[in-house]
Length: 337
Image 1 (tube, rainbow, N blue to C red):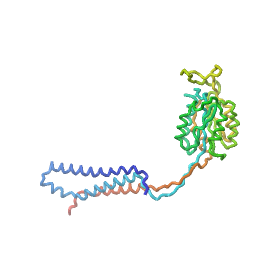
Image 2: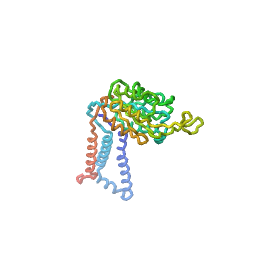
Image 3: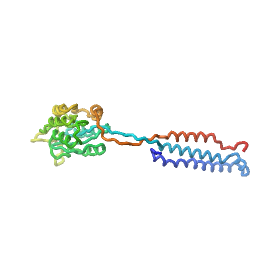
Image 4: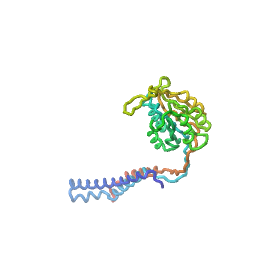
């Protein structure tokens, strides 16, 4: 026999409650009888009650409580082996952590909005493995492919513009990093890159990197963040702690979304998509459901487990039968007795 919820057995102590109630009721009856009935009449009145039947009624209630508690513990038997397969795709998130992601054309800023969106998407995943690559002037694999979404979220929370010491924005190198270190094998299937950036690139040949991804059977879904027309200044805190804006050659830097480059990258891969979020809402959970969840998936792992037939209904039925039987057991002696 297999017990599905062993903790419920700790409630077997409830079977003591009918005993305590029986003892309390017995004490109250005797006390009341002594108050209102003369002592020489007590023996005559007690003869109309059958103590054995009263004990039987108590035992029936105790047994019914035991059977009810046991049914809540989900008893089961007849184990049958069943193989369960986990299927999914390999998804590598490439997240831009360059200083341009501090621009506030998306509140509170581009980077934080991107992180919130990734966290929301993780809630929608169904057996897919995920990895995280962050980039600015260089690229780093922060989380290898994993099914441990808790660990992935932990690494994502630690990401900031300080995660990469080298400034700049090298999208092409980030894609190559994902291809080399992010994916675990060379099979040309079941692979997606989810690139989240404002699209600014410093001569890292991102379109050529996307073509390499196509050659390896990797699809790129590019998410473009930021204002495409006017752009936005990049807030920073200087060495004295004063809030100011990033400057280059004494001129404030305005960061714009480069949608053209991202669109070319997505189009360079089979089934690739460019999503122009700009300064609107990001719903990566919806992106997953529409673009990824329905795609062909690989077998990631399989295991054989034993499934038991739950039989709690039998014990519930026995408990109810005992309670019904208890109702028909009378405490009074029959006339012949």
